[in-house]
Length: 367
Image (cartoon, rainbow, N blue to C red; front, side):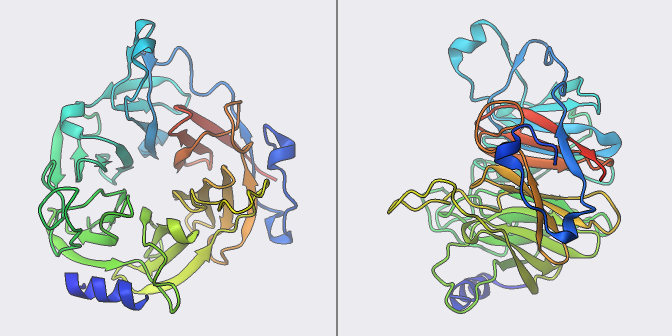
């Protein structure tokens, strides 16, 4: 849709029953009275986990058909821990009951810093490897690499390296991509190409064969030119909209599928412990997101890394209806740098943690 120069001009021109109730409970607005509550399932996933597997940071997750849950294991474990465990594979699939179905993936092939995944309408699994600069499509069981977009180890920069100047070019090459979704109607592939402030800052759209179609930057209004554009997540809604995490601005930006800006959804934050001159809230309130499974996708679930909780918003009004999770910590129901979220067909919510190195399930409880 826009050329490299256009994207750069645009960027410059735009310039609950909870585990820890005391930490997680909030006064709910009237509109939230019919919003489900979410209870931790302490027995999910089932243990032992795989074949005595040890996971590193979980960079992302997704939910596919039959409510199978896939998690992305970065494998960054403490070497000494492998004296008592086996290194878990890069991709791990669990069934709805929390049993490990299989693990797969070759780290040399899939790349570094796995960041997001998506199961398409045909059951294929898409993986985003941020550090390697590519997105890949695998068969549903991971046995076959079906497609790769981008050249491994080459970046969309002035010299093809991570040290080069980001280009945001009109081609199917990325600079630390962060997130991906596939339009089930057209097969078009939407990529949030902006995992780091030093890289690209665009949404790139490709056809089903991986050919570049169009792109656009995050929207910047007057007076916002100094807000670093960091499109950290991306999901397509059923009603033809593209939801992108504008992480540095603490909001979700909504576009149509051609890249026309629709609106902002602000995700608020108030520090529990003010830090004086040291700025708080630097992790971002809108890091990753997911929709509720109803056809209208009434609810928007947003991982807020500042409060370290899940905010539940009314998708159309943008109002925060409730939040759940026990805040920062390593006890049941709490999170340590949550980095992936997914929702199954029953409305249960899954949260994968990068530093916590685990996945937890929160069961929907209707009001």
